[in-house]
Image (tube, rainbow, N blue to C red):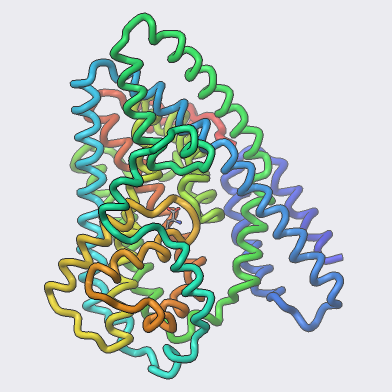
Amino acid sequence: MRAKAFWLILVALGLGTKRHWHILAAILLGVVLGIYLPYPNQSLQPDSYYFIHQLFDVVGQLFIRLITMVVVPLVVSSLIVGVSSLGDSRQLGRMGGKVLFYFLLLMGISALLGAGLALWMEPGSQIQQNVLMTADAATIIRELQNAPSQSLQALFFNMIPRNPMESLAQADLVPVIVYTLLFGAAVASVGESGKPIINFFESLFTATMKLTDWVMILAVPGVFSLAFITVAKSGLGVFGQLWVYALTILMGLLIQLFIIFPLMLKFLGKINFMNVYRAISEAIMVAFGTASSSATLPITIACMERRAGVSNRIASFVLPTGATINKTATTMFEVIAVIFLLQAYQIEVTPDKVGIIVLFSIVASIGAAGVPSAGLITIAIVLNSIGHFQMDLLAGGIAMLWSIDRVLDMCRTVVNVVSSCTVATLVASSEGELNRDILNNHDAWTEVV
Ligand code: ASP
């Protein structure tokens, strides 16, 4: 009965035109319902309780599946169109250099910010040692064993596909991007004979964006279900001893979102950040709901092109690379999480360790995929870099981080997405390809979902 009532509300929410408010309402409703109907819930009959959770779990997973489905064709087609429209290889090099500079600058700033905050707030110093020992370690060790290869050399070589088709089939985005960038440059350099290929990928891009629009019909029930299931499963009790840690990360994310990005937009592009944030509001909410910047990519591209006034050429080049490489929030998170672990285990945090943590967090976050919990999995790389820590010795602490990670992951994914949108806007502005009439005129915006 209750489930039916909530479904009716959701359907009603989905009927209007301003869908981004509906998505926000759906997230809030999901959180409230998740608190109200935790998993497991003694007060309900096992059948109905099982049914409600299963139903929303299915809807949430279905939504994630469907948007993930369009990511590979979209990345390939948009990058080939983007790169080939950049023209000669000198232009491509210049643009690539500029984008990489912004990505590294933002990740560097956020790593230093994370270090400053972690040393100031000391999130790990109040953790009781017995909690570290008793936390569930087995799952964690399993997860970390699935982590990507930990040596830097392997990380580097894995970026170059042995067989591009294999990387495509496995949706391994970093090698796919490396191949596509090179292939796009080759297509551009062969002139007329490359035209049919460009035409083909232009059509593929347009049709895939259409498919994205269709998938987004499910956005409201999709993010509602994801928010509900997340809160119902983890509850808010997990914050317990970790509230200082969570607060440190949230403070860092807010500083990036409301100080660093706005200042960059203002001083480097004379752009009001609120216009950009409003333009990408759907992408922000979908990032929050899915905790995956890759899955959000189709919506990010749609928002940037249709509302932020960023040209197709820039959006289709910067956003796919950004969703894979540019993880400013993840960089900061890794710095804070590793310093947290050192503090919790009473290992001295020396300046040289901090330097290594900052550097390797940038590397690890570049290597982290745009999927849920990727940032937590790749802290293995950072931990390895500061000494030969046995993962299982730290497993209790890492288990604590897992217990709270989903909610923080949702927040950092938002910042990762906004960060790439900031770079795309700045690059478009510096290339004279930012249509300010569209960006500043909300009435001209077309619906994204
Ligand atoms: N979930 C994040 C993203 O998709 C990565 C992370 O775990 O930090 O951007």
